[in-house]
Length: 267
Image (tube, rainbow, N blue to C red; front, side, top):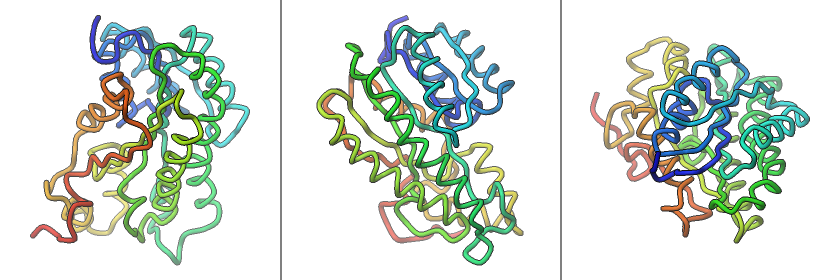
C-alpha cells in the first residue's frame, strides 16, 4: 500500500484507545509498514493491533508501565526486534488528574497524583526518546518523533493542574530534543484541544454538572465542539511523514481555535 507513511515503522504509546488508536489506524491507512501498539491494557491494545492489520500493516503489542525506565527500554527494544528497526516514535500516552481525584483542584491535588501524571506524561517521553534515539539515528526512512502535548500546557487550568504542567514540559522538551537530535531526527508536537476521547469523557463525568463542564471544555474554541480522534491523527501522521521533512521543533495546535483568541462562545 502506498501513502504518506509508506514503509514507515512506528511505535505508538498509549494506543489502546482514543487518539493513540486513531493515529495507529491512520498510519496503517497511509501505508505504514508496521505499527507497534503500546499500552498497559493488553486486551484493548490487541484490538487496536487487529484493526491495524485489517488496514494492511503489520502490528504487534507491547505492554509496559511507563513509570518504569526498564519497561520503557524493553518496549523500544521489542519494537525494534519486531519491525527490524524504528522510524517514528509517537509519544501519545497520557493521564490526567481527574482520573484519580474527584474533584481535582489546587486544594485536593496530592503528591501521588502529581507524581504519576508527571511520570507518564513527561518523564516517560524523555525516557522513550532517549531509548529510541540510537535506533532512529540508524534509520534511513526519515526518522522522527511526534509528541502529544496539549493546549492545557499553554494556558492555566485548575481542574487538571498536574496535567497542564506536564504538557507544558512536553512542549519545552520537544523543542530541546529537536535541537539535541538535529539534523538526524525531527521532533515535533501536536497540541489537542477538547477531543472526543475516553479521557475527555471521563473528565466530563468528573464534574458536578456535565453541561457546564462541556461548555468549559469547548466554549473557548472558535469551533465550539469536541474534535474527533481522526482530526488529531491526520496532523500527527503528517508530522511523522516525509511531507514534513523540513519541519522540526514545531508545536502544532489541533484545538478548534482555542489559542487564537481570548473569548468564550455563548452557551
